[in-house]
Length: 139
Image (tube, rainbow, N blue to C red; front, side, top):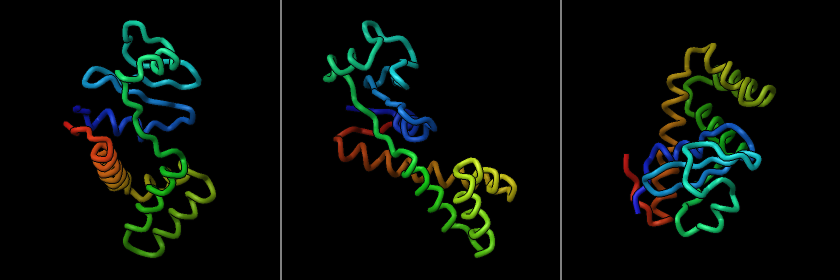
């Protein structure tokens, strides 16, 4: 079975709690947040119960959660050259969370490096997840 890389990565990068993604192979991604469905309408599917009843037609996409997102940010910090910049950005993450981290990264003009690092990590995670679930990853 084939799955699009962008669809897997989308499920990993969504910033809210309680968001669940289900994939209908090569058709669409359904996202549920607090019981509300988002995404393209799919005939006969309007709730997570509908997805569960038709589970053979869906793939539950992976999630890394807040702790996983924090680990990716910490990995980026460790990849930076220079103790001072690592210390400042780490302190921003620890004191103000992801918003503080992003603000510190932006103020040091490292946002492009951050996005590239994050995307590489998420692509590798997506690739490994697909291999573990016998899915062919396509772009």
